[in-house]
Amino acid sequence: MYYFRYAYGLDSHEKDREMAKISSEFDEAVPQWDVALEAMVRDEYQHLGRALDNQDFRRLANQYAIRFDDIMATLFELAIRRHWDYQDSAGNYQVISRKTIDKLYVHGRLDEKDLRSFTGGWRPSSR
Image (cartoon, rainbow, N blue to C red):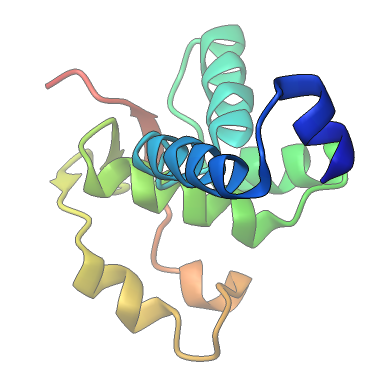
C-alpha cells in the first residue's frame, strides 16, 4: 500500500477508488474462455489444415501438460459464442448450447467418457 501511494501519489481513499475503477474496467474485458488455449488450438488447426478431433486435443494436452477437459471447456465456450463450429462424424453442424454443456458437467468436470459422442471435428467458425 505504501508503495502504491508513493508511486502514484494517492492517499488510501484515492487508491481504493482508483483500484475499483481499474477492477471494474478489467472485469468487463475478461473473455469467457481461455484465450491461450484458443490460440493453441487455432494454431494447431492452421498447422494441420483440417478440423481437429478429440485425439488431437488429447495429444495437445499431453504435449503441453494441459488438462484435456480445460481444452474442451474452452472449445465449448467458443462454440456457444459461434467462434468455433462442431460438425458430427456425418458432417452435420451441431449447435452447442449452455444446456449441452450442463448435461456433460454432471460430475463437475468434463471426463473423456462424457465426450465419447463428440466424434466429429472442430474448426473456427465460417458462419
